Amino acid sequence: MNIAIFASGSGSNARKIMEYFQSSGVGRVVLVVCNRKNAGVIGIAAEFGVPVQMIDRNLFYESERLLDVLESYRTDFIALAGFLWLIPGYLIKAYPDRIVNIHPALLPKYGGHGMYGHHVHEAVKAAGEQESGPTIHFVNEHYDEGDIIFQTSCRLSPEDTPEDIARKVLSLEHEHYPRVIEQLLLSQR
Ligand code: GAR
Image (cartoon, rainbow, N blue to C red; front, side, top):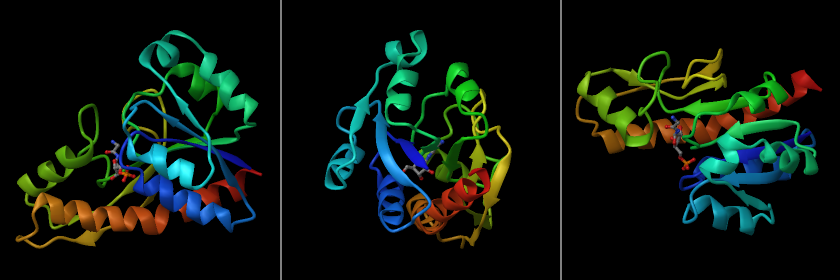
């Protein structure tokens, strides 16, 4: 099955997914969709020979042209990996239960608009949480509200800084996201 990764950040999850699916017979990464022209994921995609489709708000929200692009790569499944724009309804309709996101906290806590990256880990730290971890969930038209597919957690110590928390959570993301995507692909074939 063909996977498109939507990413706009440093791309470390995208790298893990591309690496994993180089040797999985279940799926392959056919496209990266990106909305930030200096995003790290662009260079990573080039390393793996995966084409990148750049998008702007106009193309994404005011047209459905991205659907044609996704179809031209025969995309079956979309994985968001550090992609912060709300997914428009036309994409959700075209890929029902086939768009997933990874969020760096144990949803439903610490989710919603503006809750991304370091903001999440700072909030977790400020609340004195004793654990955190990534959530993988289906994407709907609201930020971080789709059904939860997978969660795992790590212990936090009172000395952990937001950066320490980010590191711990990111390492769990890398460990689990590709495998969970593979399981979903297997269940949808
Ligand atoms: C990841 O920690 C991901 O969970 C988070 O952005 C980071 C991207 O890192 N996503 C969100 O906060 C979504 N609300 P990466 O570019 O290195 O994969």
